Image (cartoon, rainbow, N blue to C red; front, side, top):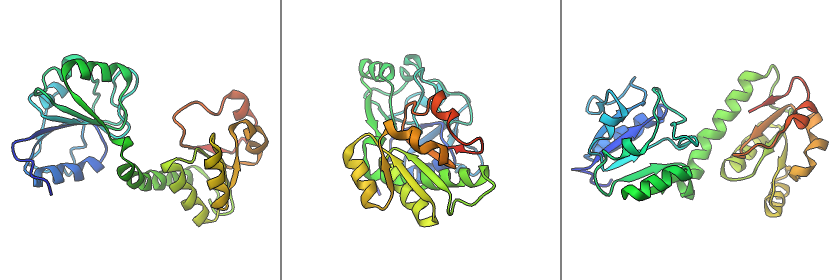
Length: 239
């Protein structure tokens, strides 16, 4: 375990998984300040700030959720509203580091001008693959809660076969679902075929959607437009 004595780390937003991170950081000797982090179960050594600015003041590093922020800087997963601005980050220590799953262009530019180094955690394959496990499990849980039928023997369409998509495909297949995979790249469609799934391109969705019970979208872009959605069963669920 790294020795983080003398380091001040600020956590802005996140779900209950952040509680584990808080424990690890404190056990490593870091000073931890939080804002927008679930308070139930938080270590007493953690500083619960009254504002995002208070949490950031003097911090050597800021950790945002893996989902990062929207295009306006609003943290997507948080128990209290947090908007990342130049003014907010100007109170950080010099040469601070920002850890975030993704960083929008405007925020990257502001960080560069302030001398803040960015570490995009989704670029780390080891972390992203491990994170795909709870993400896939959560998606399946949401599907189970939203449907009156079993996932076993249901027709599932997976949009994208990246790190999360691959993990989700294996889980759905293990449950006994019939799994189609829409992927842009030929190598991903080949991998889907090798896995015993039914591959197709995004241009072929219209031929597949009428029979689909559940759609799992792992692509960070609009794929299902109005026309495609109207071709689906009225009972279909999109996760």
